[in-house]
Length: 502
Ligand code: C2O
Ligand code: CU
Ligand code: CU
Image (tube, rainbow, N blue to C red; front, side):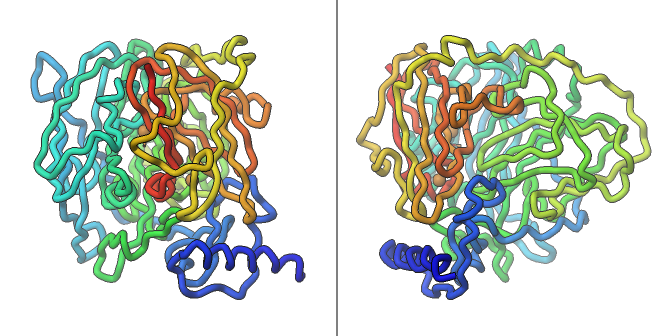
């Protein structure tokens, strides 16, 4: 027993040294995180009483989400329409809003072209897109296109802030394949708060392949966007970020899906495609059906898998996406059916109508993604080491410095990076590692080929404590791009670096 208590003493020491503002320390030994470091069901170290209120109990025991009661029909964000018919030009405003999210209370929020979250932007491969970005907030922001392959100056990283009232037009050509991407702000040190309060939206890229595939495509009917975000509402129904913020990643007990609390999704007895985005600051989700029945995954962050992969669950860390298809005509029973997470919390109940829709046969061949022999055998040319927790997070021993370029790479040249999540004395946590301006391929995880459902384009990869992953990565455009942990508080705390593509 005394051996087991020791790490807690070390942790307490570490917290005191770290100057973390949690004043109560727990006497309760809880060292589960030491034992189950590969678990993806949670990612937090904290276990003292004050942070427990803020959602952190331990590395493997994050506060549970309240079950969705299913009283509110899921909000489906609008599709943004072009400013003109002869070209694709969009206008996106970051603004403040007020929404009655909870019963009888009005929450102050942020949103794009609306009160909360944003519309869905649709791009076609090959098109030139103009976007007029407008900052109507009373603070600086940026417009970052997560997963989009664009020149550095259009990427919306922390160097390209818009002051209150400022506008900027960006222009780029869409060169990548069909995928579900997203956009969100990225001002240095302020990303987590702005996303938390509601700034995020989805981007759909379509191409000739996605047009011809047999997959559900009717927006809002059988092709459903789903943005999952956990939040903490105070007694006044507000999202008081500063009061609940946790340096190691802010975790809430209340789930919003597309901004809807207690959502329900009406569907027909047909195949339904769910485009899942983990839009949380820090919480990981393992999505499953409450019946344990299977579904297929058809896409990763940046494109389709080669073929549908049958799974019983899919795990997404912050900013990762997956597209899945659930065949509601094939399930044993459609009563009390819901999407749940790893601890059985009801995330999204389905209201399945008796309406049998025309059944469709999902295409067996979706894409032609491959890691080449050359990529498999390429030497590692960049090493990245992720380390730390709370404010003490770093990459290769350093914190973000906007004046420092950490790496350079040549445009159009593939390199293999090795990313290592170095354990700390508490065992460590999963860091979702993201790179701007490109989609990459996973070559291996600890020397082993990735599972089928990760054999597709990625822009974020969950790296487990002690794990080393190799990725093959190429940038199509020039510019300065960020790479960082997508636990937004880690990003804001400096777990970020820069690469210049020349
Ligand atoms: Cu989702 Cu630096 O980005
Ligand atoms: Cu990004
Ligand atoms: Cu991290």
